[in-house]
Amino acid sequence: SQQGEEDPQALSIQEGENATMNCSYKTSINNLQWYRQNSGRGLVHLILIRSNEREKHSGRLRVTLDTSKKSSSLLITASRAADTASYFCATVLTRNSGNTPLVFGKGTRLSVIA
Amino acid sequence: KAGVTQTPRYLIKTRGQQVTLSCSPISGHRSVSWYQQTPGQGLQFLFEYFSETQRNKGNFPGRFSGRQFSNSRSEMNVSTLELGDSALYLCASSSRVMNTEAFFGQGTRLTVV
Image (cartoon, rainbow over all chains, first blue to last red; front, side):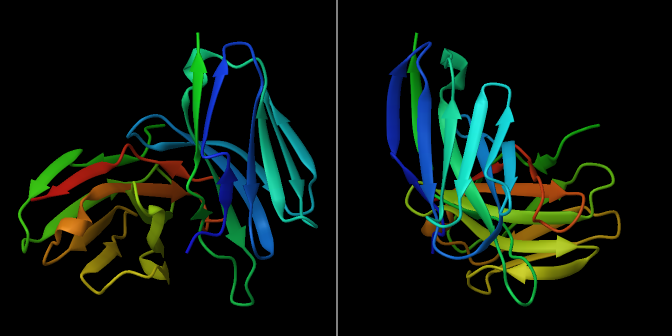
């Protein structure tokens, strides 16, 4: 079953605009990660935010985490056509037996129109 | 460093056959995980190996199996292929257990006809 659920499923914006994607999850996490996937290819790690962190930045990416709402958001500023891809959140859950492998949501398909 | 290498990139098999996919992790990485990606189910976790030991297993039938060798290279095998096994199979490696940044290969596209 899916742990993370991204919203929206698809997003289309103009080049230069900001893109915001959201991820909700159900149970306690150790960390939450965002990945990008270009069509039919492997995933590329973008950013990792731990459960005790609230915000992280990497270049044009900004990730926030609200553990009380069990949600995270990924903001891409000043988007470019090359940002066109699917974006996935993935959670590492906390278990008594140790942390779980990455559990992925179904992704947001971002299209940036030049 | 070379990235994660998966072979073959594309594969066409017939129902009932078996298939073996290979993954070479980044040098020094001891953790390897496998995922199945389909349009309907998204990315589903198959297994995770660390130092030749299976640490976690996803909810897949026994037809799906894997192993890891002493050099950290990993293989997964699917026996008695079904049409529904058509998917992109992704391998990821990590320096430690799979709760840190994961590096993915380009995947093996398996088509079962």
